[in-house]
Length: 93
Image (cartoon, rainbow, N blue to C red; front, side, top):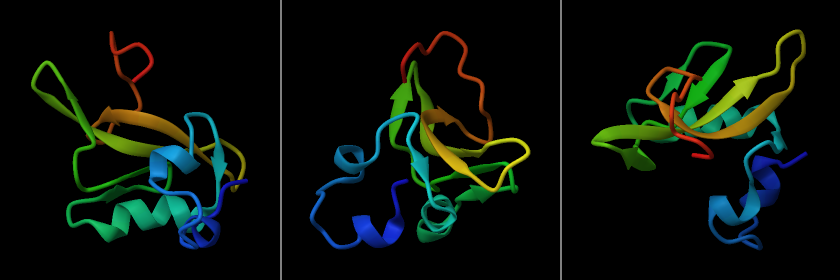
């Protein structure tokens, strides 16, 4: 499991160097991205950074974490549309 405390040590560089799509992360990390930048989103199932990380065809995409249904576990799922888990036609983004 990737943790916010471990990433905060500075040994791993940028977030994208430390966490890859599909990695399990601690709840502190999932919450951090929704809280650290104004405009973040959290609804208990999805946590998103408030600042766009990417864009596709003029639509902003946000670093997104999902809570795995029926568990207390969070997974990093990459860049997603604001407040959505579905990214039609975006492939591996």
